[in-house]
Length: 339
Image 1 (spheres, rainbow, N blue to C red):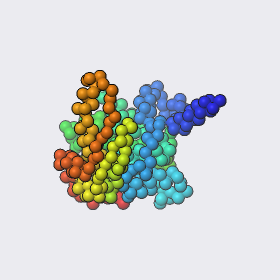
Image 2: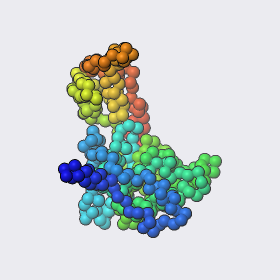
Image 3: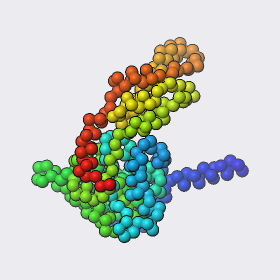
Image 4: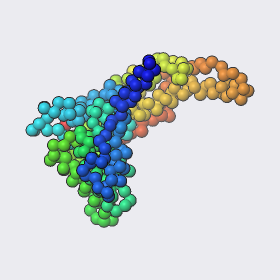
């Protein structure tokens, strides 16, 4: 009886974690020609929660606040967002790679309980003539059908680069697809549909100006501050952790290391911590291999302590990947800042 109850509880939790979508058979925008395209777009809907909470994102407090204002609060408190305070329809997250733009989008998918369309260039660009603009149209129609919805356009510059002035610069199909995307964005601005477009770009200066105008909020997701870097290092390399049951200890000056890592993105910091944690692991590979080759019982594994000196040696050959771009982002922010 107890096992049956546990099974029912697990099944219930699984259903709660998975979003149940309306059947496509009830979608009025579908026809014989569009059915296959609608099925393609539906594959990009998050059915399972990404399980990323706001508190899981270290730092980025201003970006989190603005994303909540633009996406979360209008859904949570609709009575406040009417008239001049009507919800924004588009938001752009821009900044260096590895700073947390996609993490913010996943937090929106987790916290908002909306239908979340995770769209990239491969989702709406087709080699068949006319299909790209049809895919864009179906995407927005499906978003209205499953509203409240969030359409996340990742790597936006690959979809909405600046339109060429002649046929030699850009393919006709690409121009038609971009035009359809802009038309659909205009449709959102004049409708009451609870559909929001969240876009991310590493190269905002390459975006089409028409698209920038429709993305009313533009937020720079910059490199982490010193306190954020310190929190990240202590998160990935705490004083004591376990790797598959093997104890890993560290003795690190977190504050000093955070100062040394100025200019590193969150992704850079994680990779550096991983490389530092590998140093004591590498020292035991030879002993483990000799026991394995001799068919002997594996000895108890004891790892050395990761020290500040180890970490500093890793920093010698692990350099930041995006530091030189920050000046360009800052200049672009001053020109296009919306908040």
